[in-house]
Image 1: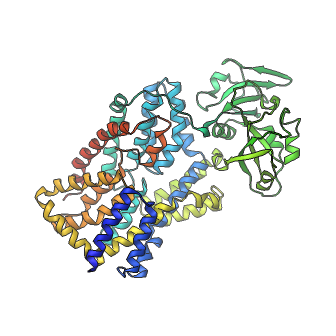
Image 2: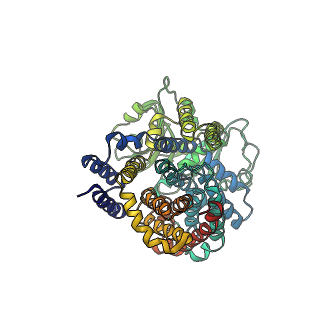
Image 3: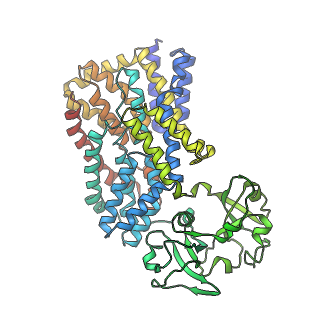
Length: 580
């Protein structure tokens, strides 16, 4: 059997496995690479070149820089600032969706959706809007924003990295913006005015990770809260915290009203999700006395974990002070969660079986908790330090500006920014390695090798020659429409990156065979692969699927219209910016 036939058979098999996901996409890609090597269809050096390519390094670096922005609380700060300035419900939702699209142009779609999810849910509840009316538009807005820059999605970077192998220039940093901005603007208008009419009203489900904790936070001298009433402070509206009691000297005020005035050194018993409590410590000028008194030896790393109180624990029936928790374990308790809501200060609460404690301390101390407390999960990475947000934003912005203006290659700018982020401890090495989506890295590297084999064996010429005969009567507009539609169809069952890498050589080869400039068809495939709206299989859509209580048909109903809008705008704009 000749090499071309073998490669086309491998291509068909890989397409089937990508679509069915009988194996994970990265495993399929590795098996494909192994088959190419075993059958001698590609030299070893070319097979592994993808793992050291600029594209792979840039992708890995951007994953780390996105984690840096999350750890510094930059994205939450943007969302909170927007919420504070919203004057009405409709303006709030539209402003939030526009902000999500803007942020997503420079960071991961999935990360942007994950960070804005609790913010948008809380804002919708306070505005009297069903969360199901806004969570799906949130996911779609993050996807739309990804089409504006080359780093907006990993798909854009993958396409850009594959182009030099086909003899084409990589995508410019803002090259996609010519079509990405019109697509995003028209798409957002669809989400503002059409999508809400198509979406059902369903109450959102709260995730387990959003369990409410009770914490004692003391107002520090000079805090912006001092002298403000609870209403003016925006603790509930802007920060997601409910004040259930206030300790002032020897007096405790339970369930204080909105006109209660906060004073310095007041201890506020606040209730809210752990990430809101942690963010409040960074931005509101408050501190935990328990944490302040904890002495951590040397430069030992500090972890934050959730631990449940088991039957037989020495803590049961006692307050944390009576049980001498800090002295016994060398750890501090920042907050406590109890299934039954309570109006009490953390310091006055007697521990019960099943209570969940938010505990901070060194790993060895946490490991010594014993048999009466079981660690449920590690929330260390949920901590945000907004004091470092300007530095994190400066590093990320510097990499984008230097790469976007061509002062440095984007890969070089990203690697430098990652090195500085690690050196300045904006992100730890462990967090950096965990933040990289390794399946995407493996998929891209292997498929770049497959693209090389596809060209070298002549399989690309055979397949595109056959396609050109079928598609020639359609003309350039028909060809662009056909390639766009096929790419959109492929992105539903398979990953966006895989769909783009499968379609790219076919589009370039067919356009070249018919005498067209391949650039407009490359742009069309990139936009089509990045905009997956019709099913909930896109990661951003999966994040809102449960909390919004959506059904599969909700995505089909709303996403089909948004896909049609994207398709129409792309066909109007692309030929005018990149002539055939």
